[in-house]
Amino acid sequence: MIPFKDDNPVSTAPIVTVGIVALNVLVFLIQLVLMRDGQETAFAFGAIPQNLIYSYHTQPIPAFLTIFTSMFMHGGLMHIGGNMLYLWIFGNNIEDSLGHIRFLLFYLFCGVVSAYAHAFSDPTSTIPMIGASGAISGVLGAYVLLFPSARVHTLVFFGFFIQVLRIPALIVIGFWAIIQFLSGLLSQGGLHQGGVAWFAHVGGFLAGLLTIKLWLPRRFRRW
Image (cartoon, rainbow, N blue to C red; front, side, top):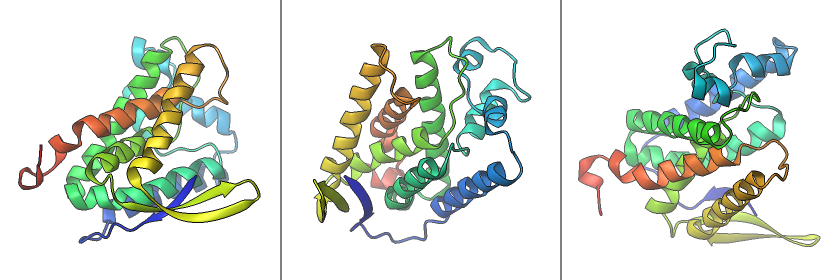
């Protein structure tokens, strides 16, 4: 399933969501044009689990800051394209619910939690993690809790046929979440999963799901 838009209108302009998308695209273009050695850049500014857990200094900036630099770096067009699509679909509604500043802080918070979730799952790893997936996973967790019945326009593949269906967010995001959990468990079992930081996705998703109501303005909280 590939979602591409939702039927969940907003009352405010999603300026922070647009800004985050623009910054990710800008950093990606800088990576392509100015930083010829992508691997060297990833090792310099990506989030390396061993450095985060044990405070090793193998990078030009402090390890904690690499969480934020890594959040705006991507490894290819498919990587950034998929991440920005999900952020564009679901981020505007969370920003509308939280307000601009709260949303930005919430997004960064989920990114930090996701980075440490990945780091603790493999604390001796020296492989850098890059990408906005962890922070965006937090947005998905928040969305599925606040808007489970919102309809999401989704491409569904039936063999060689493609159908566009309007599916409740609970099913679309729930299906995505199950894949992340299962893939994370399989990766812990020693199966190679293409270098994806599954536990960053899981950690970010749980951070968003479990804390979103704490971030809501008091007048909107419903328990």
